[in-house]
Length: 364
Image 1 (cartoon, one colour):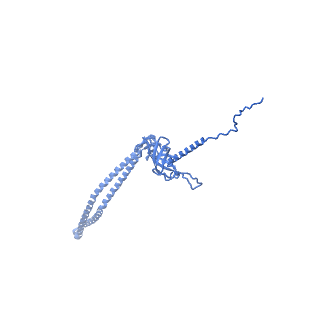
Image 2 (image 1 turned 120 degrees about the horizontal axis):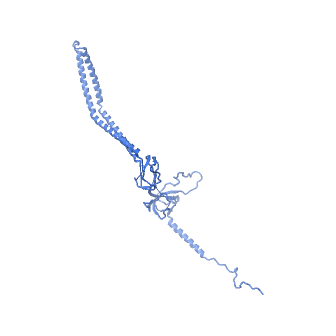
Image 3 (image 1 turned 30 degrees about the vertical axis):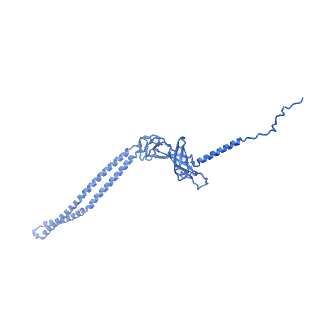
């Protein structure tokens, strides 16, 4: 019995059947995706071609280290960490007893100098009357001495002109002694008159004494002002509104002049953005800036470019690059740009310094 073929005759052969062509649908999808990407890239370029941004930006502000100008133990501490203070607030008090004693001593010295000045002024007023009177008295004494001399000369001539039997040797000697005494008194009166005649010079001497006492008063006043100034240094006050940070003082701490007690951070905050040098071509002061803060993504700040530093960051670093030595590799430099915040800050909750931000500058 013959075997029959199990394959139906009417079934098509796989080898002889034609292959199916791939469809055009994937190519169309790919073209659409590429087109959409090109459109998105074009739109993105149109909207961002006038914007410059960087992630190398941080909040910045004024920070002052507070240090006393007086040494001593801290007796009162009126601040805590991160406390907000107002300008003129009393923050720290240093033991003022030594400076108070110096102030009191300076006051006493000033009082003594003022008393000596008053005494010199009184002496000057008295000299303006006394010295002319002494001059007049000296002139009168000179006239009296001249009269006494004339009288003594007359008596001497009489004793010498009479008969020796009518007088005695004692009378002659007495007349001679009176003559010499009158001559001496006349010479003394002339000398006294020469001194008494220098009225203006004597008054000027008293005026000079008054001037010297006045300078002593000025010196005592300066010493008192210095003592009061040193006393005021025992009170450390806030130079401006701000926040206390990095406090390094406690009650009872022995501090020296110039010792850092704490830092005071101003609430005025700006942004320092380090842009690449290739981003500065069209950047100008006054350009509008929008700023996003990493710590608070929902906070949006608005500001403007205040100024561009005249030098790259590496130029003013502690160890600037020496490009004239060794092999040179060109590195894109960054230049600090100061951005002032105009809108978006909360006065009661200012931004801490050093926060990372991302500014977006709209250039012309």
